[in-house]
Length: 292
Length: 302
Image (cartoon, rainbow over all chains, first blue to last red; front, top):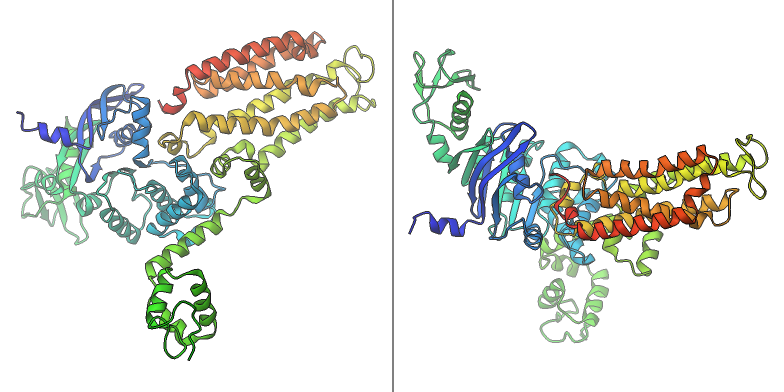
């Protein structure tokens, strides 16, 4: 038997050959991936296809080609699609709000859409998610009076309704301040029931901090799938620190210690090798994809 | 000393007339009989020592959870008299809460509808006393001439259509992506919103038609065309872009109304032949909607 077979059978979420076009733009190009229980980070620049991929997994969008399986369910079948949605928590990248709603009113509205129709249970569930994200004291505040960071937290709160088994978060840390980001990481790490969590981000440090698995999506294709340390290791021996800028490097930037960090194939004069980070690995992959 | 706590004799009630640790612990956990709870509460009101002792038994997490639930309940409220009345009539509370996201049920929208209706109906009404000169041949009493009704006949069903379109077009629902990704039936949500928007718009339209200097049957005669237009927009939305569907429905009404107005016979658009045509359109659209309602479950993002 193929060594991969057991993994294929147990994958909670699986995508095979997903493709999606918007006019002449190919957003996804034959994407294959599997997601296990736990947190998976989806890393990629703007326009890499992250949002399209996540919206397909969330059954909001349909692929032009390819198949998706979520907990063994096929979203093309109406009944199975509804079952997936019952087990889903979704934070879209650009979540719109009814600005006249209160914070509690909005989460209550989403709870009804998630079929939590019993009034008492709904109030308890709304209270639980607002407390989890630190917004319970703002329950009566109108959404139009919230800051951008608070709205983002509200978006995260609604995604947590009903203890979803599949939690899809599209750039959840955008707009959060450092303290809120730490709290968010703590929240995700402590989610009960071992759900499948997939979050897209530009922040490599978010990935390094909370994601046991990482997928790098570049130009609509999966360029890397593995652990953060494996991603960092792809840049091993190709990251240096130096006092001067080096034009031969693929990428160079000045760090907080006023020294230049170089990613490239050759060490700059007088440079010393440094331990690569997840960000280094990602930048190197990104550069390689751009050079193709 | 006699224990002030009924059914809590022995080690539960304190020997000195205060609540014992076991009693306070069970009170904090919410397990005693109601009569014991009342007695403990009566005692706590006047006893600082027991209140202080009680705090050691309180589950802080449960307290925080209850506080959050109370805050949420206070924030959600009961929705006012209108919602309470509808609840008493048997409309489920959660359905009424869903309607809060329908723009065409908001006060500002309804006031706009009433404003537009007042404008066109006011113009027609002003013809009767001669404040505005009538155009075209003037008919017999009790109303000055059918031509004066043309603006109202054009606008009234379009206002109903606009209300329904606002209830289902994604551009009017900023959280539409959440609705699409949720298990609640998209078709049910659409119907609930569309029917409520239809009802909310028909009331001022019928009232304006009743007040107009026109035939007495006009308020009823507008019902079927309005329903047919909305059904056409919904059915067409399963085939084409929903915005295009709403525009097509609007054109479908506006063109014949304008042509008939130009021919000085605007009332033909609501007379028997037109009513039959509207009934046929309504039936056909209902069939299309039932056959293709799955499109509303998929969402609009494709």
